[in-house]
Amino acid sequence: MKKIPLLSLLETRILGVLVEKEHTVPDTYPLSRNALTAGCNQKNNRDPVIEASESDVQSAVDSLRAHTLVIETSGARVTRYAHNIGRVLGIPSQSVALLAAIMLRGPQTAAELRGATERMHRFADASSVEAFLTELAERGEDAGGPLVVKLARVAGERENRWAHLLSGPVGSRQPDSATAVSAVDIPLSELEALRANQTRLAAEVAELRDKLARMATELGISF
Image (tube, rainbow, N blue to C red):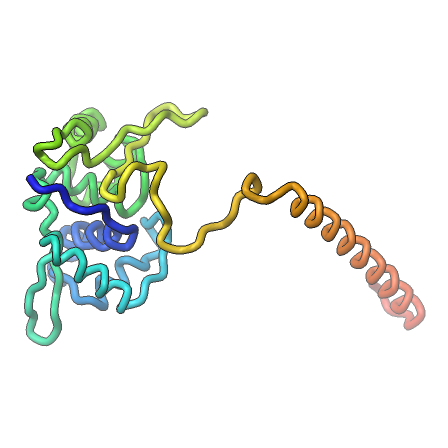
């Protein structure tokens, strides 16, 4: 089986939305570009939350269509889109549901995935979820390679989380947009300058409060 290229965050979000809406709003599936964009930009049940334009979505859809992961269908008035993940990746509907949940909400435990996929497929228990995830993680290269990975357990958590590999190894993924710079990436000199600036601003605020209090006293008003 030919291995698909690495997908962007928006591309995986589109696939996840198409799988989800196929089960949750079957009357409007396949989805129009407008409905697909709204699904990608949902604030609930999405991690991370994104703001994609219709043109962004269209470009990503075109890329997915080139690999037959998305299929275009002609509606009465608008073009609609459906996913083709199960056939392209050669996986059952249960695995498609699990991948969709991870693409929509990020890494999750087997128990969390069981709840997240309830409207797409009802798993008997968390162990059955784990069994399908293990299958996806142990796929051979002749089948296209692993599609998920079991992450190291985070301190304080009782279960391991699972992440998808459609965008490459978890630690090497590049965000689609700029992300916040962590403190460890800021030079010490800049941190010291920021602290000095913070101290200066705090002193200025205190001085302004004193002046305002004096003015209030002179005018005979409470402060």
